[in-house]
Picture 1 (cartoon, rainbow, N blue to C red):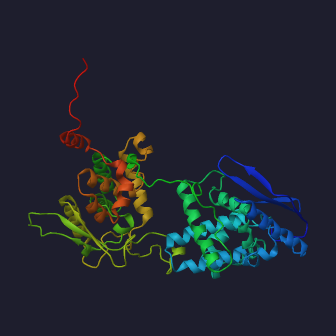
Picture 2 (cartoon, rainbow, N blue to C red):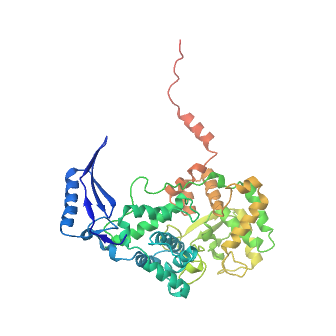
Picture 3 (tube, one colour):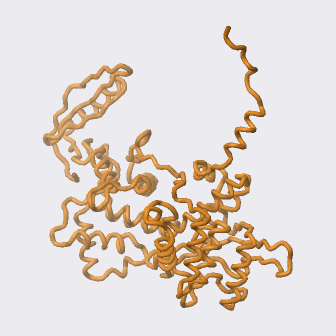
Amino acid sequence: MDGTTYKVKIWKISVYKGKRKTTHTVRWELDGKEWRAPFATKPLADAFRSELVSATRRGEAFSLATGRPVSHQSGASGVNWYDFAVQFTDAQWHRTGGNSRRTTSKVLTATTIAMLRAQPAAFKPIDVRRALREFAFNTRRREEAPPEVATILKWVERNTLSVAAWEDSVKVEEILHAVSTKLDGTRAAAWSAKRARRVLNVAMEYAVKHRILRANPLPKGRGATPKTSNAVDRRSLIHPHRMARILAHIRRRPRGGRRLHAYFATIYYTGPRPEEAVALYVEDFRLPPEDAEDQWCDVVIHTAEPEVGKNWTDDGTLHEERDLKGRAEGDTRVVPGPPALTKIIRAHIEAEGLKPGDRMFKGEKGGIISGSVTRRAWGNARKAELTEREYESPMGKRIYDIRHTRLTKWLNDGIPPAQVAYWAGNSVPVLLAFYAGCIEGQLPDLKRRMDAQGDLPELPGED
């Protein structure tokens, strides 16, 4: 792919007359491989063919990667893809969070494997992937690569195509197929393929900005990216009776059950994202006096601490502290909690001996509560309290489904979408796009309102 050739045959322009338009295609051959360039008009096709003919008369070499004369090439042929991917990783590292860093590494790993001239014979494929994913495309850990990993990465660098491969549309299709396919050969989920395409698009724009590529080579237009739906599956919502049983089961856990019960109850009653709930402190719960008539509390949500893995944070910790999703730096939101939550939180603070400045939901060792612990507790409670059919269904399969259940209940209770969007930390359009299919129970009232407006006057019957 990186070589050049002087064996060039240029053929006559072929013309295809379709129902809507006529296409003029310039065809030529390099070392037995046919190349094509379609044009909408004959003058454009003639001009391009003349450029090819002139290049052959000048004795100019043609690139086997792009099919074009060497003089038409961008600077891509002089840039090794592996070196470019490492440079792109470092440029993005301080602009993105841990989860985005991990996703970028995963996508670049699959892309680099597809850009190899040959598959490695001296190394196991799993070792090559691990070396790329965990070290090559990890700015913080690259210098920590052990000798055996460094050997693999040197081999990859020597055996990777140049960025000019992206100027070959066939190779681009091959790469897009690779990043959209799982290791077992099956197709990846549409959201995964779309996310990979988004990472590659940023990489290609970076190459254009630095004058390595002339234009973004990724296909555009309808069908270029897989369609995905952001709508919440209403089957994932949890019925209140089942939720009560699950929470009661978690509270009965012998190890940390009461702490976990307070954590899950907070998500259920106020709808924060799990990474926002773990970031709450004692002073973030504004509890009313015990003798007050109104026992509603307020929860101030101001930070998120997602669990991204110690390899992807700047300081090597498991979690990273971030501002609220999609909000300006320092933004907060205040969500009301019902008396049931006030009672749970009061008992939790007293039982744990918490004071202002303490985390509200601690792990067993006093630090931030672990995602593996919460997922295990939730999964065990679902299995114990749901029927086998319910357990196998999407109902409450993820902790995030607790949030979906609360936001849907607010909408079904008739709370204005703008208010729900504020409490949820979403925009109104995003909220409605996600939950429109989950709203129910309002149809009878809507029918009465429509009927009250009237319609056409009653028509006379037929004679």
